[in-house]
Amino acid sequence: MQSRPRRLFLIFHGRFPSEKAASLFVAKNAEAFADKNIKVILIVPRRIGRKKESPYSYYHVKNNFRVVYLPVIDFYFIPFWRVLSFWFSFASFSVGCFFYLLLKASRPDIIYSNESLPLFLASFIFPNTFYEMHDFPESKLAPFSFFIRRMKWVLAHNMWKAERVKNIFKVAEEKILCEQNAEDIEEFDTPVSKEEAREELGLPKDKKIAVYTGHLYGWKGTDTLAEATGNLGNDYLTIFVGGTKEDIAKFKNDYGANKNILIAGFRPHSEISLWQKAADVLVLPNTAKEDISKYYTSPMKIFGYAASRRPIVASRIPSIMELVGEKSAFLVNPDDPEALARGIEFAALNKEESISRSDVAYEWVKDHTWEKRAGRVADYMNFQEGE
Image (tube, rainbow, N blue to C red; front, side):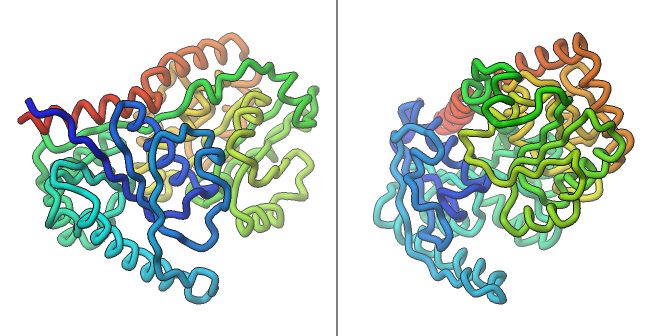
């Protein structure tokens, strides 16, 4: 059996570092692979709007992988050009990656990404291409089929996507790895009590608090949670942590007048665990109206919620039910503010049942750390190399 390839070139087109979950994901992924004695080179674009702070300190990850910034064509600062700007940036980055790999990579190396175009170009030179499938193509299935069948390996985040890759695109089952997302347990299971967390954040100690952390996109179901707050008593406070400047401003305009809603806005990643520890209930209100929410996603926040040891109230949809069930979370009908409110109340008031389900979720997430995930993916690639 051949030894594992010496280097892994990890390609990511997003702003890096940034407040986006995808940017955090790639940083954690790179760190975890490097911890497996794999030499990791992370290739990212020098995009406008990225945080100027070092990615290692921004994400609190080890400086055990190399970050290479490639120049790109970026007009994102021109508002009416933003859609075109993305494609200019993506195309120029993809071409830049191809030539960088020609100069720096060798055939045994693994080229790993969730970005289709850089991988497609690389596949004509490098045999070990690994596509991590974050979304699912809703159109242009024929071109995507041609692309995905050029990949040596495909990682799907849930069984729904894995089955469709096999059945729709006719990819051999042995080329598909189903591997869910992951989280750093120690980062969220901090030795801070609910009372201490509230004291530090200046939150009321006499209210039952439901917390949502993440972006405020429509498919995340945050409107449903805001509306559900109207069905809760004045002894409840719903807190939203996260979002872009534009989304926060709109959300405040829509719901900021409700005294039982606190819109905390974007907070540093290192602070998220404190907000979650301050909660009586953590909420994942994803909609069932959009396929990205209902089927495609493997929500990173549910792993962080489970690691926080707080009861989880979540939508009863396939993408979430693949991760947690009735023994580890309180599942409610999606897009139903009244049902969500009743679920929050039940979790907040039934302490023993909440502790029981939180314990089950915590035991589950122990198998979904970044370290264990990277180990399984690395072992899979190594096994395939030996075939």
